[in-house]
Image 1 (tube, rainbow, N blue to C red):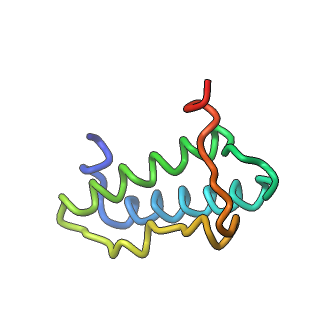
Image 2: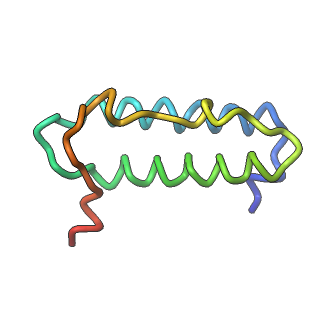
Length: 86
């Protein structure tokens, strides 16, 4: 993956950006919704890939850099991605 060839500074910027966007999309998603919008699922998938890349390259970041706890936003309400329903 080309992301694994980035220098540490830009890789950390990507992680920060995708985590920030994911948090914003979490906040914009209603607590009454039972499914996440695809945009949020896509951001979370990219954040997950960045986490995997981080564990394999020479600029590892702590897992907490990638973690967003959905229960902080939605409590115990079960949720899923819209695309997995269709």
